[in-house]
Image 1: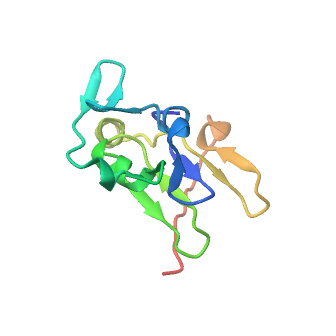
Image 2: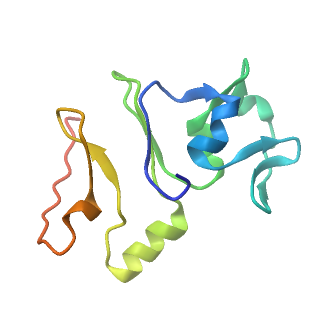
Image 3: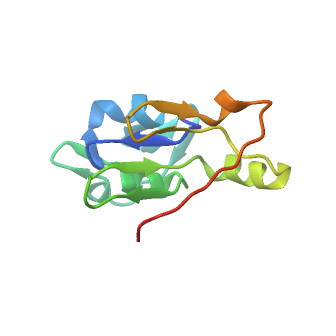
Amino acid sequence: MTDELVLLPDGPMIDADQLEPTLGWTLKPEGLCQDDVCVLVPDRSLVEVDGKIDTIAIAGLIDRPAALDSISKRVAIGAPRTLRTAALNDLQAPDFRLPDLDGTYHALSDHRSKKRLLVAFSSW
């Protein structure tokens, strides 16, 4: 899941053991690590509170956008900057999955070889 949009339905705080399966990164004493890449975490208390990990703080450290819906407490963490930049340069939308109003997930790739119109809006 490390290169996809990640939706967290229960808010930004997750158990420490869920960080790697959720975002593909591990919090180690030397920093936030994925494979042979580590990002320094200058103040661990900014990302870890009572054994829980703040995914919005983590997203900022690994250069991924994050948004929190304060009413539903859902969090969306976007794709890494390198993928977003490549998509802009290639004029291609990255694949993503989002739920419809009934909760069924649909991916952009489900509609390959079809003309698509993507409409994004917000109530605020």
